[in-house]
Image 1: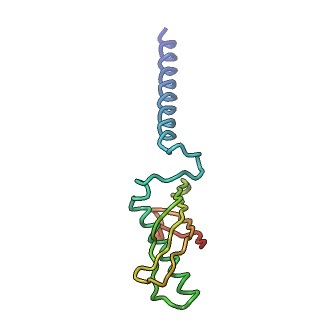
Image 2: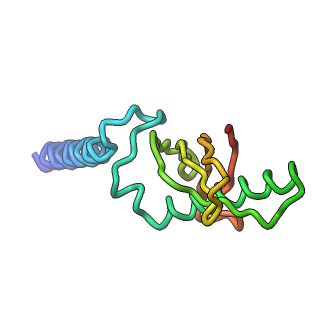
Length: 137
């Protein structure tokens, strides 16, 4: 009788653990903005306003300016990120961000804005936290 009570207690403990794990996993999945696990998902405005995403925008602008300076030899022209559209994020080891941005040169009336697509990989634990993987203009 004592042995069967222990077996029931062990089974209830295992069931409670399984239910708790299922609730935890489903709540995690519910918070992914209807994303495909491991796939790209659209970013909300609150995501785009985050300090992390702003750091990625700064890295994108720095990379764009470095490429511009190496192609035309003029490092005095500094473009900034203007309007951002089609922003997506992907959970990887860290977070990947893919977005289109209008690159503008403040104070230059003769400079045309360029539309570019960037992919930036953000890893908070790395020395270079926001690494630009690609720039296509």
